[in-house]
Length: 275
Ligand code: MG
Image (tube, protein in one colour):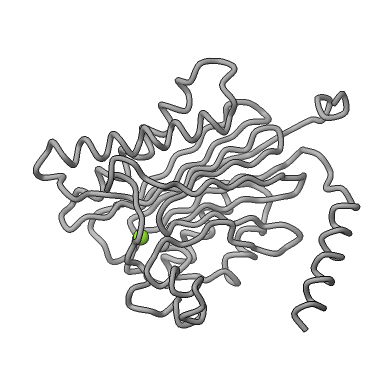
C-alpha cells in the first residue's frame, strides 16, 4: 500500500477536433481535463442527426460530462463520478431532443475516459473508439456499436468486410436516444509509457490502425500527436469530421515483468488449445 501511494504520476492530455475537408460544420466535439498530475479525463463525442442538431448533441454530451464529473462531492470514487456524468449527459440530450422540435432525434456517440493513479475507467457508447498503445502496439479497447460491428462480433461478417460495409456507421446504440441507456464500462491498469487515443470514426476510417500508430508515437507530446493525426487525415481528404484525444502516462508505475510473463503464458495456452 505504501509503495503504491509513493508512486509518482505525471499525465499529459490533449484533444483536437477539426471539420475535415468536405463538411461545412463540425458535429464532433471533444474535451479534456487534467485534474491533477495523476488524474486526467478525455471525452470525445460524434453527433448524429438528420438536420444540424448533431452539433448540439455532441456539444451537450461533452459539456455535461465535464461539468457533472467536476461537480461530484469530494470522496466520490472516480469511476462513479464518470458513470454519473455520462448518465447525466444522456438525460440532458434526451430532454433537449424531447422539448425542442428542431432538435428532435438528435443523438451522439460518447467515449469518456478517466485515468486516476494508473487506473483507467471508460464509459462508451457508439462508434468512437478508445485505443491503448503499449509497446508499440495499438489495441482497441471499445466495441463499435454499429450494425456492421455487431455482425462482425457475432461471426456473421469478417472484420475487413465490416470496415467497408455500407452500414459501418449505422449506430445500434447512442446517447440521448432513450432515457435509460446501456453504457459499456471498461477498466484497465495503465503503466509508464502507455498512451491512450480516443478518436471519432472520421479519423480511424481515413487512416486505419496501422497508420495511426506511428503518428501517435512520434515525438513526445500529446498535442503534437493529436495535430499529426488530424493533419495527416486532412491531407488525404476526409468526408467526415475528425477528432483525436490523447493521454500519455509520462510517469507512473513500471509494468510488472511478471504480469507480462503471465500474459505470454496465457496466450501460449490459448494458442495451443485453439490449435
Ligand atoms: Mg463521424
